[in-house]
Image 1 (cartoon, rainbow, N blue to C red):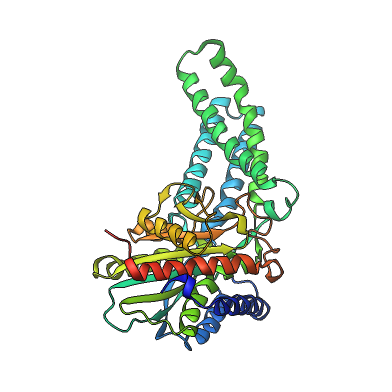
Image 2: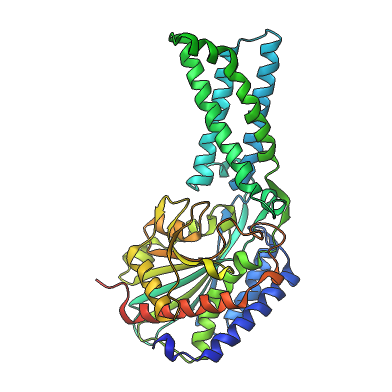
Length: 425
C-alpha cells in the first residue's frame, strides 16, 4: 500500500482522537514525572486503548533515578559558588594565598564540568548511584503480520514530562535561556582556563602576564559564581510540565499509527509494527537505554530487520524535520533509515522537510543508535527552543492539529515503504 491510497478520513479521525485523548490524559492524570504513579496510570489508560487493536501489549519495568539527570545542576552550582566565595574570603583574610584558592576553585570547576559532560552531553548514568531509585515502565503494543516476521518497525514516543526550566518559562519574550546558559557554561570554562594558567604561572616565569594572572585573575571567578546562582535556579523540581506536545504528541503518534492500520484493515504479510511508549526520557533517556539493552539481540541479531522511529513533539510545523544527528550533534543516526523517512515524507506530499540536528539535548533515538540499533527521529519543534518547552505552558491548548496530521502522514508513509523494501541493500 502507498500513503496516497490510505483513507484520508481515517487520518483526520485519528488527529481528532489524539487531541481528545491528550486533553483527557492531562485532565485526568496531570503532569507525569518520570517513574511516578501518574505516568504509570496514563500508560495503563493507553494500554487499555491499545488492547482493542493490538495483537499483544505488555509492560516492562526497570529501575531509574528520575532526579539524577538534572539535580546535579543544584549540587554543582552550590559547590562552585561556595568554593569561590569561601576561598575569596580566606584569601582576603590572609588565611590562604591566591594560588591555593585557584587550585581549589580549579578542582571544583573541573568536577562540575566533568559531571556536565557525562550527564548532559553524553547522557551517561553517572549520577544515578547517588539518587533514590523508582520503578519506571515501558509499554509495547504489537501488530503482528499474517506470515513470518521478516521486518519490524517500531514507532516510539515517551510519555513522561519534564521538570520546569525556569529560564524558558520566564524568558518568553527574549532568549533568557541562551543568555544565562551561555554565561554559566562559558563562565565556568573561562574560569577553569584562567585557574590552570594561574597555577602554571606559579611555577613558570611568565613575566608581567604571569604576575597579573597570579594577582588579579581570581576576580573573574566571582562572575562565574554569580552565574552559578542562575544555574541553581534553572530547574524547578516542584513544577512539572503537562507535556501535551513534549511528548504526548509523540506517544499518540505511536498509538495512532497502529490504530489507523487497524481501522483501515491493513495487514502486512511479513512486517511487524510496534508502538513503544517509553518512560524516563526526561530523566536522561533512561527507559530507552534500558529497552535497547534488554532487546539488543532481538533487534539486531534475530534476523528480523528492525528500525525504530522516535517521534518527539509534533507542534511547530515549519520545523518538522528528520533529525539524523542527535545528542547535541554527537550521535549520527542510521543514514538509510533517515533517508527512508525523508523519501516517505516527500511521497506523502511534504517536500519541505530537512535533515536536522538536535543541537541541544537529545531524543530517545540517540539511545537506540548508541546501542547499535537502527533508529532516527522525527520531530517538529522550534529549536530556539519553543516557549512551551519544558514548562507549564505545554498544555492541550497549545496542540496544533495540522502538525499532528502531517506527522501522521509521514509516519504512515514510512511504515508502508519500510514494509515494501526495508532499508535496502
